[in-house]
Length: 111
Image (cartoon, rainbow, N blue to C red; front, side, top):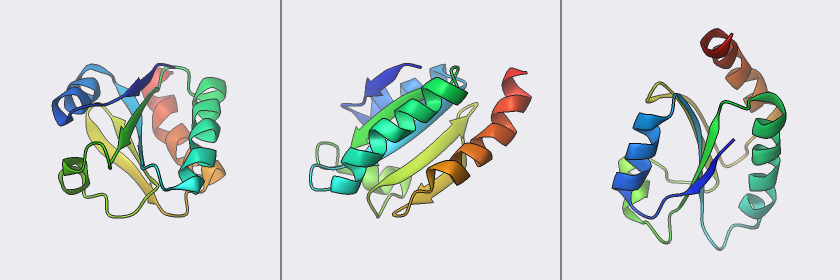
């Protein structure tokens, strides 16, 4: 798993284009839930989805990302397979359920 922090929309879009499986985590400095959630998501990817990459976008540092990705609540998790948004969870991210949803597509792509 690769961890990347996007500084521009172009950088984020390039990352999504060049990696077949990406979990995008949207955060901001004021979200304590996000601070606790990010390590859980990274751990989930390392343990169960080693081919999936982790991309973090801080919406305070990159405010145009909110509108571009239709992210209106923090935290939000988007999962991309082959450059297409496949899964979206916002506000109350359920890590076990998210893992199950990812597993369905991940096993098809990487088996």
